[in-house]
Amino acid sequence: MTNKFTPQPPFHETDYWVFDLDNTLYPAACDLFSQIDVKMGAFISQHLGIDRIDARKLQKRYYHEHGTTLAGLMANDGIHPDVFLDFVHDIDVTPIPPSPDLRDALRQLPGQRLVYTNGSVKHAENVMDRLGITDLFDGIYDIIAAGYRPKPDPEPYRDFVQKFDVQPQRAVMVEDIARNLEPAHAMGMSTVLIRTARYDGSPEEDDHIHHVADDLLDWLQGILDGDNAP
Image (cartoon, rainbow, N blue to C red):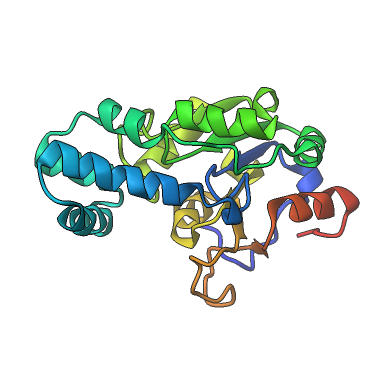
């Protein structure tokens, strides 16, 4: 296992760039999750026959107990995951501005570009199409490929690196949720936290976080300019 102070390979020697999707590839200020959040409550209310207040309580309880609301619905209520995912990801992605600058920065990265998301491939492609970056990526690993085991369950991480033949010691993982970087760090990846309002810790206290940034595009441009060396 590496630690925070293990020397990391220079970014120009990185062969695999692994990106989370939501609030990572696009700014958290776009607030797509508020749409998804509302749709999850509506789905629970409709399918379980409870009012919206109780549905929201159950939604949050399942998230905390199972890692995702979907996992709780599958375990306790027999909900078919495809029905849930299709419903909650049927959202308006126009709050995300197309980003030619992000496309240009991603295009210049050496090696493969991959997405690892707790969402679905369909949702990832909708978001990436809006950004204008879909064709730059070599693969998407979603919650279905993970057997509906959400991050940070370490087993799907192992499946992910095997499926895409990723060498962790030559990989960087970029995420907006600090705990989701722990399995990546344990495997030997360099880790980058995109700091959002959800992060309530201190980078100095999280040994599994090597780099912290407030904006993905700024951080990538810093790499390309040589400012964000390990």
